[in-house]
Length: 104
Image 1 (cartoon, rainbow, N blue to C red):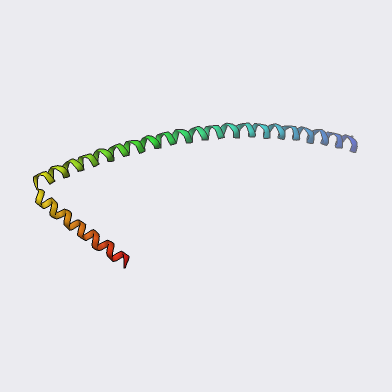
Image 2: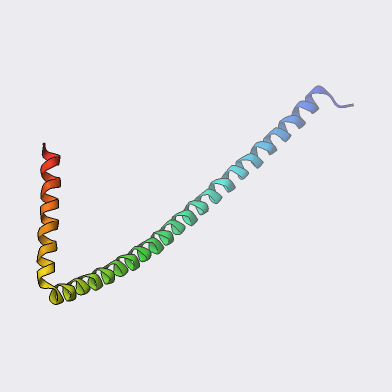
């Protein structure tokens, strides 16, 4: 029959083994979290690179559209100079009225 001392000693050994296993598990978790942090950082940098490329492409597209609009506007102004001056005066007048109303 097992004595109280034997049971206590066995329980202490089991507890000690459990603590060692827990320490090993915690160490593994720390290692895994370190790897995860590196993976997240790499993914973020990769995502930032993709986002930067998309922004560059969008800016290039807007620039091309702006150049096309400027060329079209220039052609229209060359073909209809009097109408262009009239439109410019009208737009200037409307902007002046709008600005003066916001100041009062």
